[in-house]
Length: 389
Image 1: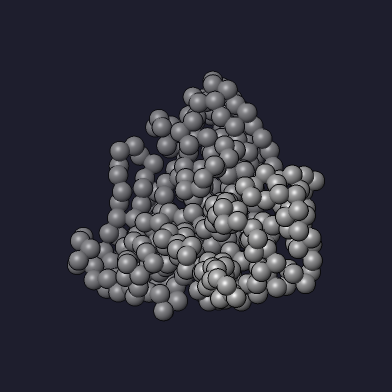
Image 2: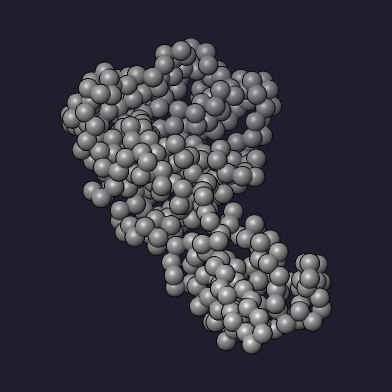
């Protein structure tokens, strides 16, 4: 990033912050702050503390950082130069959902953010229904980059240590999931022999059992609703035509479906174990949540400040309620800069999808709206040339 680009971006960020400064987190005076600057090679400025909003706003407007962070932790002495001297008091429970941690992430920035949003909604289901957090206890934010953050500041989580937070990570990510504890085998005594049958989880038992029950039923419904249902079922080992027809009839029966929700799959007891193993292999990845695991376990992490600007996109870190998240369009709602035309020198061919517009730019001189030009400059894909009147 050349000096003229740095100067232009700093001027634009400064102008924004004068009107719209970043938000303060709760207990501002117990937070450590950190900053990454636009100037190449300047490194991270940290161990900074503020005691009121005005002091924080004035510092950011004067220094104009590219990235603004504050600690997830609360400290007795947040400006101390060593972690030991800071004296840790507790930390918010944080989840970072980023496209980097998703399997098979789309190449398009727009599609990528859709995938991360769906992953965020999956995590929220865990937090609300498995952990029992209230909706107003979830502080959600678009990161300004490739994902979302969720902050939980309830008193009952503040003193959790790293190991305890790691257990939460393992639960939502399905790490160490023991299938034998979900699918228990029961011995049935017959007239002449003993046999083992598979006991399925019920919808009412909660946790992963509930989730797997719902997904198994959905998996079966999708399978039998397809045009080639009978053929698809016969393709499974040990399922012939008669069994395939019986499976279809069972899944299409409302009474049998109700039994299955209660964990009673006896009508399908003839299905071989390999079928269920195959189903689980497809189901479990759709339930587990892919998060940046070290972020949640780290009790001394820095996180982006709400309403700050992301120095690699120029987009705003947007705080959101759950209702707002469902309607949120990041590439429209997080754009803060205007439409004035800017001439830039593109050094890397790129595609920009912002404000429902799509720009395909090649190397060399290009004229773009300010918001798109700033996005490319922040990414390091273009250098500033001039503002066109």
